[in-house]
Image (cartoon, rainbow, N blue to C red):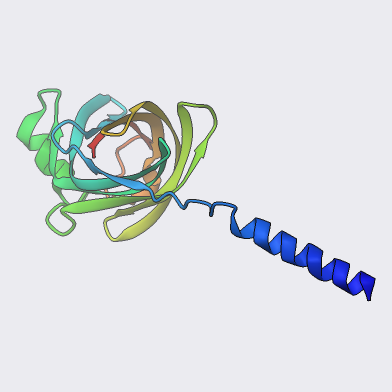
Length: 188
């Protein structure tokens, strides 16, 4: 009987002590809105006789930041608004917007969703996500760098080579990769 009473007393004491332990706080991620004025995706497309630089603007986007760390995001890319910046001008922009490349009349937007973010240091991350481009989902994984994050602003960059064969261009006189530089600004 003493063993049973001792067990009941210990169980009661443990329950009483546990009820005074503060519950763990669930911290929800803060949502930051992409700054579409300053954010852009720069590209360099090469061919055998040279290269052409240009960029896409973001139409919209949102990031999830939790405890100062990037957790996810989703973006809409303005494919129809692509700009060539080396003076090749409207003729090349028209060709890149044609069905040979981006088919901007049929697919004026692309989207990218961040699925996972793996921090390899305080500022270096590996981002994995899905690019929806020309109606096709393309899984991507690339390195990025968190340049600045606080409770009001976010800035990150990524520099990587993209396998152009994944983009399924119809024009075959290009090199098999495209160099990308992403500059992403967001505000709370």
